[in-house]
Image (tube, rainbow, N blue to C red):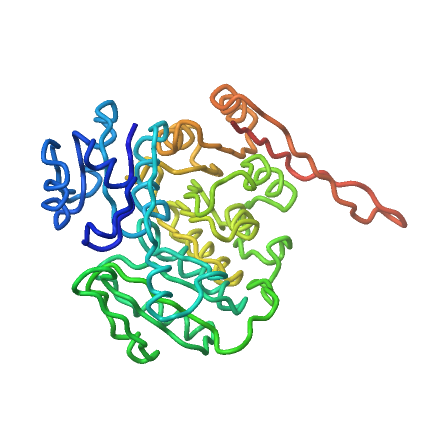
Length: 398
């Protein structure tokens, strides 16, 4: 069992009684370096380790020593894109006990004498910035109050550009190194936001100037992802609507966790992944397409739909990142499918589409399930019409 404690700031008086009891009874503690001396005084018999860089090394060590019941003292909001999220990626089966403390949002709102209810939280920590910025854009369109959690040394220029592009008009508050002697609470202007870099962990509170209106979709007015004519495909094959919906459904998008990391391999023009992203705009989608021309078309299609996937001109066999929460495979053959299996979590859903029945048969052996999607469209025939079948698409999944 790994016990995770949320401790905002560096004053031990701010720890709860339950947190102190867990620290004092611990024999193995991991924490940020500045907190290690105080934790050693609280638990003199414990073996105290400071987090090291790269942080992945500390995560791997903590997970490997689970049997010793380590206590991990994290800063800020450990369950929101914090160390809980990271441990789950490294060791999905790890047993956790979480003892939260006050959050940075709660403390900033207390400093400002403002309520913290009804605030949507977005984190730039431990995730792709593009997904967070897309989420901020949608929340601005919905006229929402937003708290943006920021790691140290974060330039606020991308956030300022996102707010400006979304037409934000309202007030800003920035709390940095909260609950420490270096705490600052500022009310920056938009101009100041463009040049600001956080000196420590921070939270930016973004509040609209007017009374919130009913939420509306940030996608209104954009072309429809459900219209094949939306996609530029340069005459090459691309996954048509019916097959896209069937493949996306078998990925079980309604069961994926918020901000799940999804990998699309051989994305081509991006149609399948962009359909999934419209259904779940919070997902962090990485599209791999080794062909420069097709990847450029995918980027154009994403821009037309107002989406921001991470598009990489790369084969999955050369892709270094792993631990994805789900995957789609549309190209690259069976070798790409096997390489994709190695880059997602053991229990993660995976869907692959093929026009070649021999590849589909092998995919079925690897994944366990196979279906064929056959569509026929009406075309003129003399004074009447006939059904013209499209190329059947085989969908394999687990």
